[in-house]
Length: 106
Length: 119
Image (cartoon, rainbow over all chains, first blue to last red; front, side):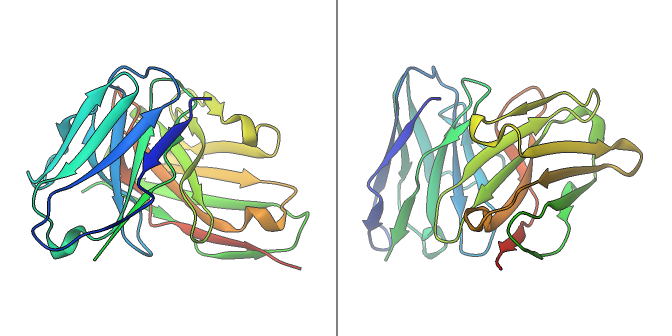
């Protein structure tokens, strides 16, 4: 299986900050990567697909980039609603795998 | 609007089986793959498998081959997962999630079902 490694595991930031979360794949996954946001007690929510495509309805302060083995999720100006845990997911192979998550906290 | 509504929480003893349902509405059930993903308390997301509701074809993550079964009833737009030989490590929230049509990321999720395995 393809392993996905996120960094950092925890990120402390303030309202208005620009933050970046990194996701690395153990082998090339082209651009077959999605990002999800999860809040406590809730299901994950799709933010980004195909590495850089913004899901409909997701604020434009969220952006994704990368290809191959290294990817980033950037939030350009943190809002109170953005404090959550973020997961990457590869779908290059039919055995999908998630990163371990990055908790974004105040 | 698209909705995936799962069955309620379950408490099971070690060695038992559990079956969780996922009822779809707001779209044509047969043409979007359904996946199952679990999350132990305080842990990350673990993909378990996918199913094509039209054909019934399935694919299982290696960790779940043998104990995990996905089925569906297209007449009531409902997918099911069954996990057998339960152990304490299977205590988790189980989610169903729909693939975006023609793609393999998850655009809609159920609300989750807590399965607790305890003697």
